[in-house]
Amino acid sequence: DPRPLTATDPQPDHPFQRLCWVDGAIVPASSAVVRADDSAFSQGRGCFTTARISRGQVQWENRHVARLQAGARALRLGELDAATVLRALRELANAAFAGGDGIVRLQASRTDDGSIHLVGTVRGLGIDRPEWSARLVSLTHQGASFSDGPKTTSRLTLALAADDARAAGVDEAVLLDGSGLVVEGASSNLFVALSGGSLCTPRVASGAVAGIARTLVLERIEEAEERDISKGELLDASELIAVNAVRGARPITRLDGKPVGDGRPGPWSRRLAAALTGD
Image (cartoon, rainbow, N blue to C red):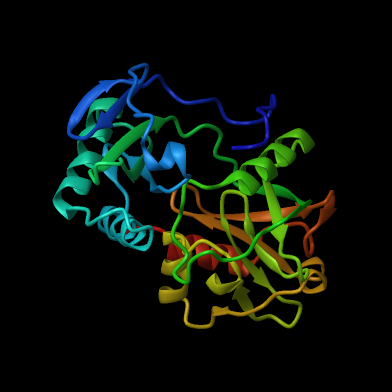
């Protein structure tokens, strides 16, 4: 998470095993695993998914598998075997966390000989704050490269935005496109409760990643809609909620140092959190 730990925050994670899953083998995280001709390294042509591990179980595992498969197709990496992706998620979760909690990131790429590769890494949950703060960053989101919003390894703008959020001491960065429309957060999709009471999220066509949590909200809350959201509507919102597959739903109660709405989590925040509880 971008914002540094403060004295009032929860304590960090318990220790875990720093391991990788590399094409079927569990190896130490310090191992050299990337070839010089790996497409994620040489071209930024890779896709990944990031899963939360709760008590040793991969949350929404089948959705993570389907997402990685779709991303590999969109990037023309090749066809990923669903059983192999699922095995990678489960084996790495079990080896690293031993029934505990954490995060697994699984990445697909290919090498010049046409072979597709899976590399999984782990990290702790870090600080899981119940409410977030955010800032609008000056970096311009470059818009959509793919119609279906895969999560790619080419993430320079998002990485720099996360740096800006960290430097400002907030949890998330909010990015606009060149037309001043809201696109996404550096690490999350955004849902905006407009001043009139409706709930909306930016279109994938504008460049937003088609995140698993975002998809679940749209499936489970029929009032939620995809549409363009202007900067003015964002600043006038009654609620702003960040969602991703690791954190679930987190109300952003302060934006650029000012309260969002009344500065407290609202009814939409609670509905999104409930929608993202369980499978």
